[in-house]
Length: 396
Ligand SMILES: *Cc1c(COP(=O)(O)O)cnc(C)c1O
Image: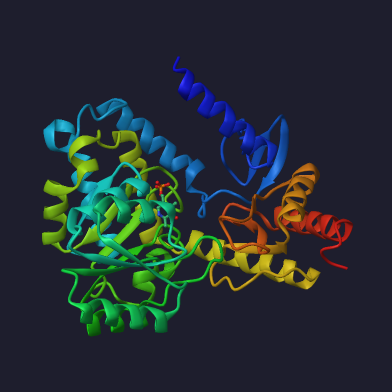
């Protein structure tokens, strides 16, 4: 064991623990459904990204088991050697249909998509304009490309226009790209895609939308680009298969040329083993469900509205969300953490999110209602919110 490494780890771990910033992870003892068991206790789960309840769906479990029986548990190789199974291609066709594009490519995770796609087209001669609240994987993907990164104030279209104009007129850069989340996961606000497309046309920006929190949720389930009818305008549609879709993986949807390029130039496709068949089969089943019926989508939005109305009536500040994501803004960091801990003791699992993930003084408990929650569960959660809110003086 290296003494240098050990000293480094000890010192830094101690510092985090002393500051109360070391995240202790509580394992879930069973399925990640609307009720989860932690330390032997059942809690109403308002923290998962399992928007449509598909992570525990019985039909999808059967599909995964059948495909595992047929193909085995692993794909055996990277896609470009012999890890491409026939069902990977079927999945990619279905993803293109789902997103309304010519083609699609799947990856092992949404995080990997951003590692893969940005640096496959952007280089150090280029510049990327990026919303300041974009997901960590977008930030890392941008860094990996070596392109100049220009931060855009959150959803500030005047700032985007001004910086796009300056970048274009400077003549310093080759290609310019604008990257945004489709739905921002901390506040639940939706990217202003019509204005973005307009600005992109004016200044020749490549457009890149990571709709991890939008697919299955916005656009009657088909995502934020579909919500605005801009399938022909957005160059890169990124999605994850681990949130509303309920399984694991990610994808990029776009033109055939874009996908052909990613198949030869994106490193996680070339150098990391393909998704297992069981996952692929479950994902295809989930996509079929979402494309065939809006039932789960409608249930999700109904539950989102119900929870928001309930919290608002109790006097909580629920921010500016336009989606089922329901932040409950508490403010001060310590109080926010205490609030979340008391909710958990009373039977609601809702995570606190504080600086530096969100701005100082805007600590919040974030609630993710799903299609799988019942009205009774939400009523129980609201009663606990009322009790804890009064106890800690957040509401009167
Ligand atoms: C969650 C998320 C990801 C990561 O997706 P995984 O499939 O979990 O790796 C990427 N981008 C955004 C915007 C996300 O919200």
